[in-house]
Length: 85
Image (cartoon, rainbow, N blue to C red; front, side, top):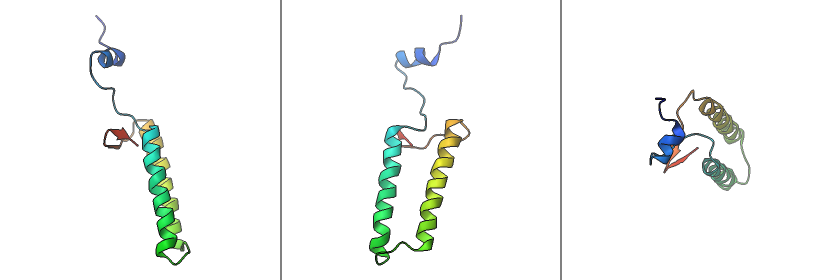
């Protein structure tokens, strides 16, 4: 007899395995980016200095790198409150 597939496990009452790349996770990242982008000029006198600008770039680069690595199952998905980023 063949081992049960993941579809069978799901129908049997088990939750599906967490996976990265959900729409809910992307919403978290977008809202965090907007909050940081709006807060920076408020705290820096109406400008975005080089250091925070580099931080925005590095944050986005880290997010894209994480998504690629998580998609290929190289790193585990990061889940917050049941929603995987």
